[in-house]
Structures are given as structure tokens and as C-alpha cells.
Image (cartoon, rainbow, N blue to C red; front, side, top):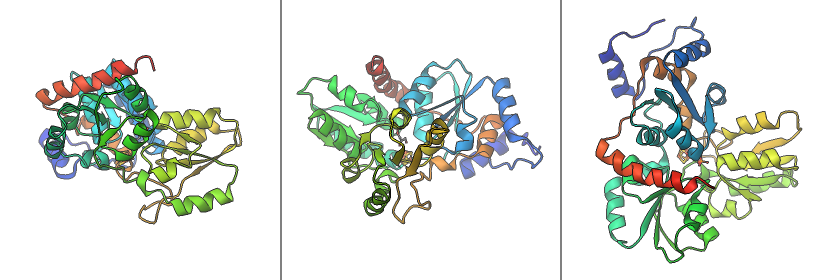
Length: 339
Ligand code: 13P
Ligand code: SF4
């Protein structure tokens, strides 16, 4: 099977490439092996809706960032294999420090998390000493440690509504989500200027042409999109909310303005209904005609298998950062309980 038995070699590969590079022999039934290993190791496979459909089909739980955090906090498994991006693995470790948390590829980052380096953010925060810091979960553990409350796209509006009306707020790192929440809640918020490279790359011009072709299609959009897209959307919500909306709507055509991975579940859920689900077009910058997150797509079934087998790359968070970050993430989970 070509397994590496030397632990040093495994760690060297992770250090050099960001993942265990061992190529799996062709005669290995990867899916069967993943099922065997997850059982043997009491591991849970968590996957975000944006990862490849083949991985979603293998996962114990597929969800949006909030659902995945709730699962990571409550799972009885010994090991969490997180198929998503780095900050998601970190959040799982912050919530479940006693568990081993591995991700298929350490290079799976996030433009939002990268937009907010801790030192620059600390200096920014220092300019607004009387503000509460709300950070979107798409940020590093260090930023979570500098924040008062973490939010996701599914609870941000409802969490802000629970705060006193005169509470001054910094919202980071996604300026588009921040603007959307400010508009929805009527709050004036100081925004950090970060963006998701995937959602801001949806082409308004191409979308116009697509809407002319499908005049009856409803446009559903993720709040990480720019205002020009959100203003025309029939429904705005997190990935889970978009899925629910498309599932429950009596309409039969939808244009989906978010990362294209969500179409896998949407199409599975709509099978047999005759619903047409169309991805919103990206500008020519994206490698795919639709919107694909290059980081989410770093997750492959082979890397997932290696992560399970070698229990690497492992996510670690320094304890002093984890303890502070835990407070802001736990506050979010508390404030989301009855939503
Ligand atoms: P949600 O999972 O909250 O919908 O956010 C989408 C996203 O961009 C995750 O990286
Ligand atoms: Fe980050 Fe955007 Fe990719 Fe989500 S889709 S992981 S926000 S870059």
C-alpha cells in the first residue's frame, strides 16, 4: 500500500508540502479504506458544503460554519477530520482541545482570514477602545482571541440584534458581510476591509445576461457577495439557509450566487423535483466558469485518506490563544442556542 512507517518522514512531508504527499497505490479501494479507518480510529469526518461532492458524500456531517462548529464542540469522536479550510480546523481545536484535529491540506487557507494579520488588527482595535469586537468565524485563532464575539453568516444579524442599540461595534474581517449586517440591523459599525475572493468575483455583467436567459429564476446569494449582487437577490443567507430556501421554494429555477460546491447538495436535495439550479457566473479571473474556492478545492479524497491514516497534518493552537479564542467562540454558541 506504500505506507510510510517513519513518523519523521510524515512530519517532513507535512512541513515541506502542507500535507502527507504519499501516493496511494492504485489497487487500494480508497472509499472502503476511509470507512474502515474512521471506524477503527473513532474519527468523525466533517465537511463544508464547498468541498468536492465526493468528499461531501463520505462525510458524517456536512454543514455551514455554524453547524460545523456545533458538531465539533459536541462530537464524541476521538479524532476530527475537518474537510474545509484551516480556520475551520482551528475552530474545532479551540472547541475540542482534547481531540486530535486533522485537515487534509494545511495550505487550505482563506482570503478573509489572510486579510487580518493579528498585529495589524490589534493596532486597529486599539483605535476604538469602547467598541465591542465582532469577528466573522473566517479568521485566525489569534483574531478570535482578540475578539469579543464570533459570528457566522447564519447568526450575525441575530447576534447583533441581541446587543444594546447603542453598543459600538467593530466588525471584521468581511466588509461585505459587515455592510449587510449593518444595513439589516440599522447599526453603525466600524468595518475591517477584508473580502472573500470567491464571492466578490461574481460577475454582475454575466449575471445580467444569465437572468435575461432565465427570467423566472430566483437569485439566492451569500452575504459575502458585494452589495450590487445582494441588492438584486430574492434571498440572502448562509449556505445552509440557501439550501433550505431552494429546497422549500415552490419556484423551479434558481441562480445561486455562492461557491459552486453547494450545488452538489442542492441538486441531490432537488432530485426528482425538476428544479433547475444554475451557478452564478464568475469573472474571467476564476479558473472555473462558476465560482470555485481554490482553498476548499485543495481537499481531495486521497489527502483525506492520508490524513486519516497518518493523523497528519494536525491542527494545534497555543493554549493561551486557544483559551481567549474559546471565550469568543463559546459566546457565539451560547447566543445562537435559541435561534
Ligand atoms: P457559511 O458556511 O457560514 O455559509 O460561510 C461560507 C464560507 O465562505 C465559508 O468559508
Ligand atoms: Fe474563504 Fe471565500 Fe474560500 Fe470561504 S469561499 S474559504 S470565505 S476564500
